[in-house]
Image (cartoon, rainbow, N blue to C red; front, side, top):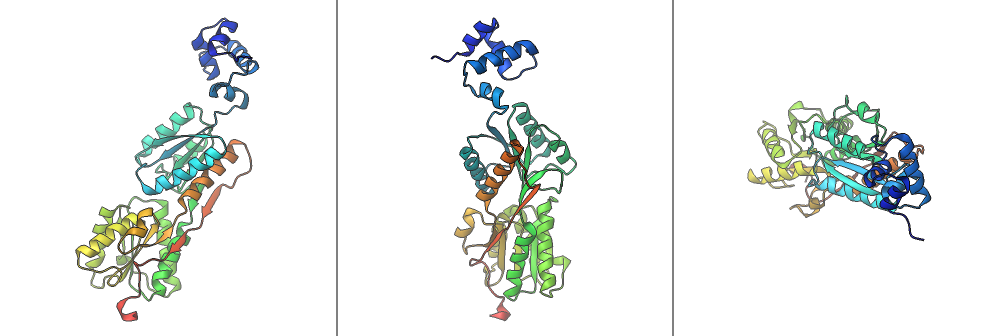
Length: 336
């Protein structure tokens, strides 16, 4: 039997095609009685548009994903995991770019809510802690992935920053380094505070005195790291090893070291954080803390789907990092 079209439903209900479309989207422009009649006709007729299916399930089988910058290799890896997990469950993914602007991020999230997506994932959120409770008050389930501001109000999936950086700094200390620098991120992110915390804990456990002069701020990008390493190398007693906030910072530090005639790792050992695809192909290949980007994306999706179906879900899921030792680290000269 032929299924009815919107035109057929409109004729049966004695309304216009546009009224049927609005009713199937639950538009407030259609009065309640007419809307209920149209939705009943659509269900009885087996109408199979996404809008009609959503009338029965109260779902659209769509997920909105807000990213800071789609060109970021980390974001690309995470989104791949989100899409794989969503497709396995029959969900479509809508992607939007916030350009790391909090105001734009909020607008994008609101637009997804208006489009009636079933849930929203926000990656590397730049929205401040004051705004997170506002986001969680929305009717649409929300999961923050690697949120950059502390909050206990939202469900989140994040890397164990402190544990990963602890492993990185311990690696350098066990190689024999005692002047270990840290190039952080000046934007005040939670991840920077946690990675610095792991660095400090490792130094304390190894009996290495903390020196504030060895902690400098980059911007999470190669350019900022080059400037930051320049500051460290101007010290009377410069570091023999540097742990960087992320791989992009380590890339910049590597270039700056070479520009100053230093060899990596012979003169300066470097460690990053992320394990971006390019890290294994640098010269020398970069020692780094691996974030399982695809797995984190899948975990964020699974968490969100449990919220959508009102199943129990952990408030915060922390994923352990893995230290990947490559050729950018070695003992200092006096230990060889």
